[in-house]
Length: 141
Image 1 (cartoon, helix red, strand yellow):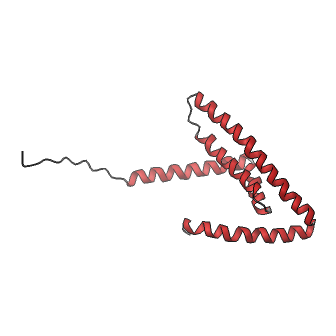
Image 2 (image 1 turned 180 degrees about the vertical axis):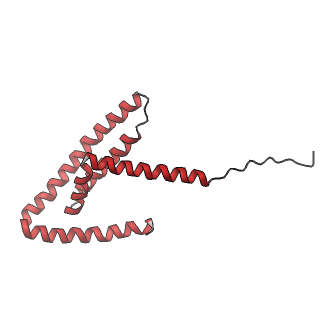
Image 3 (image 1 turned 30 degrees about the vertical axis):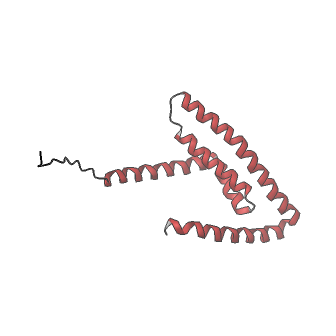
């Protein structure tokens, strides 16, 4: 499946999944509790984004002060930020994704897989590129 097809599929299926979960879970725990949980997860998401961004900013600043590239901290911070966004979006499915991304070992595993894939693609792309050094001389001299 091409990546250009993934975004429309996400925008179609996630709302459908969320509606089904709202109906099922809301019928089981009640409307008031469902709405309360949605607002509570959004508040937690906002708090995590605010608090987490400050913490990751400090980690990045410390790494830079030590002369170390903070790639891992930047990517981990982005995943943490995405987790907060998932908690802000109303719905149980997005809350589940956001909560899973808050688990440090899972976040680190995703990060390692991404970095391995990125490194292999980068080395594969560098092998494809050919540099041809050409020198042009003119017979008119």
